[in-house]
Image (cartoon, rainbow, N blue to C red; front, side):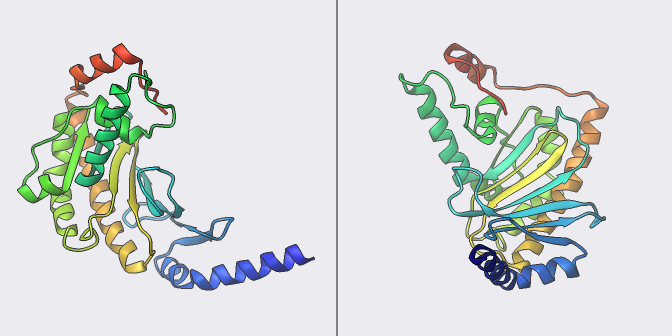
Length: 246
């Protein structure tokens, strides 16, 4: 009896805690659900805005983000060969340092199986350097298996949206990752305090990223899928053991 009462009070307390978020979700035509532990939530938009998406906020699932994080996912039906990623510059530098230390550690011959795929991509794929402005180069880094693909993704509307976000939702330079993987687009960002205004800003950025990913996908698919992986890095990794992909 006591356990049921405690669960009832916790449920009511969490419902009140996230009332503002739930109202925003309902007004946006989305469905709001609390996570089982009550310390996070899921918002799903199953109809066009201009397309369906899923948002989660809660404890970070990546060691490189401390505290809570926001995750966004959209199923776009991209080619599974389209693998491209953009992330905040500070986060890229930290992950590259950790990967370098991992492969130069004589006691460690291969990447841990729990090494996030984002970190392994920094080793597997060449860097993209043709950003359209100095500010973009200083705030973001990117890698891709195809230079043409990621140029099509970042050198147009998405590049502009990311640069504008540096004066808005990304002004405090939070750890941010956006990547295309398994046909979908994902966004992951450190976010301690969930707020509808922040969600709206991130969703606008995410929707631009979706549109530009579809554009890059169709453009590159017309000419095939060139692979421009970093041979030098791959050769070095092979000597010490292969990377395990999730």
